[in-house]
Amino acid sequence: MIGYGTGVQWVLVLLLSSLVVGRQITDDLIRLPSDHSSILDRVFHGSDKFNDDSVGTRWAVLIAGSNGYWNYRHQADVCHAYQILKKGGLKDENIIVFIYDDIAYNEENPRPGFIINSPDGDDVYAGVPKDYTGEDVNVNNFLAVILGNKTALTGGSGKVVDSGPNDHIFIYYTDHGGPGVLGMPTLPYLYADDLIDTLKKKHASGTYKSLVFYLEACESGSMFEGLLPEGLNIYATTAANAYESSWGTYCPGEEPSPPPEYDTCLGDLYSVAWMEDSEVHNLQTESLKYQYELVKARAGGPDAYYGSHVMQYGDVKLNKEMLYLYMGTNPANDNFTVGSDHNSLRPMPSKAVNQRDADLLHFWHKVRKAPEGSPRKEEAQKQFLEAMSHRVHLDNSIKLIGKLLFGIEKGPEVLQSIRPAGQPLVDDWKCLKTLVRTFETHCGSLSQYGMKHMRSIANICNAGITGEQMADASAQACPTIPSGRWSSLRGGFSA
Ligand SMILES: *[C@@H]1O[C@H](CO)[C@@H](O)[C@H](O)[C@H]1NC(C)=O
Ligand SMILES: *[C@@H]1O[C@H](CO)[C@@H](O)[C@H](O)[C@H]1NC(C)=O
Image (cartoon, rainbow, N blue to C red; front, side, top):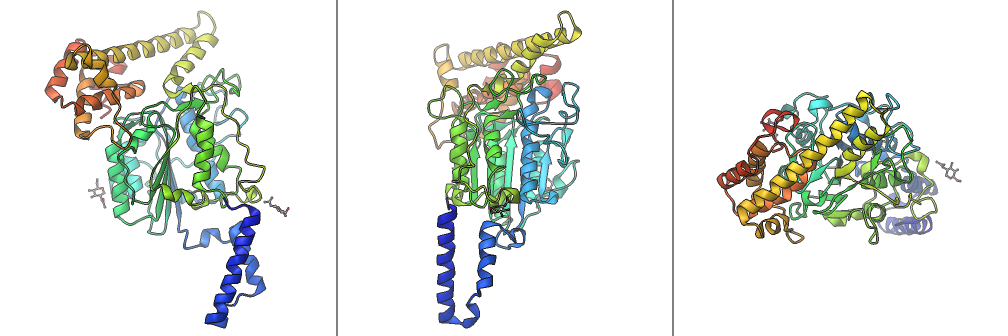
């Protein structure tokens, strides 16, 4: 961290040395006193920050991978991130937003047309570009946008990351996930191998200087663990390691809790931690590393009984860079340098809600608040019970498949085993995708909750089980194929 005092000294040393060098080489290089202030300005106030070729253009891709009012928080996170980048000076033409866009005017939203990301927060929805909404929020479009490949797009605004070799790219993804996979409102899900392939292709095309990826999801570390190599000039941080949940925050019943009319979580712990830090600081003075440490402390300190381990992957040395390179900086925060007294983040909240339970919490609050005997109460009870019973069905089916394949004792052990750090979830991603489809054919959609079972299915692949063996075991475990909204034959596969 360069504080004000040391920063000034450093600049003075630089100026003095340039004067000395200038005298030795040519008088043209001697700087006039009036030049000094412009350099100081540039360091502290970024007066010509968006014309500086060394920075190139800043690009951002922001994506919420969920829909549904019970997932309010993911789209709220993305809208909030847009506001920060916009205030930081990025142009709309360089910020590409993916939101399903079913929240602001959802019939459950107590403030129609507004979205908030913290209990006392302002609206974050106004002005958000709707580049990809509804069904256009999908894996194909997300990867095509990163690659800048317009011909591969379906629908949407057509905006892509049309970047050049000096440019900096920031990607922020928030949603449910599972081992090796990230959710999407429209199936299929995004698998880690496809994401990594895309990042490698982007690197090979020579169209960025460096890229920062912030990722919030359960087991988000598994998207990069053993997969993201060094040397791509990519620095990633994730809300969780490869085998734990990430957490929603500002949930009903928590302190601080949302205004009473909200039955849903307003944000996610890792996400609001980086955003509430970025929006109050002069980002020319804050490094990625500094923010990583702050976010790590807020999303789950070592003594917390909940929370997650924020991780770093890829070219970790890039974390010396200033956030400003990726997010710009809001001129109103010029005097709020990190290391001054103004960087007090909210402390870690006393409670948080596991991503995977946030939908249950929403349905439960709906049940509780609806008037006795009302259709709303009945509907909420039905939603709650359906979600619970599908969970139990998925858990039991996977357990049974493990026992059928590996025996009663070894089954659970094989399914639950976790590979050592540095190893990817699975060696054969094609196998994982095939077996996911096999499972879903017989036992129904894994759905948001069932993504947690990806590790079990990956372990089945790692144990060398064939597609045929998996089909037999799935058929035995699930003699009746689920119908209705849990059917994959109707609703599509997650792989
Ligand atoms: C862009 O996408 C199209 C359609 O998927 C593909 O055929 C083409 O090779 C891609 N172009 C590049 C430059 O990757
Ligand atoms: C920063 O502080 C200086 C000196 O007190 C003041 O003149 C300037 O207006 C402040 N800048 C902002 C953006 O508040």
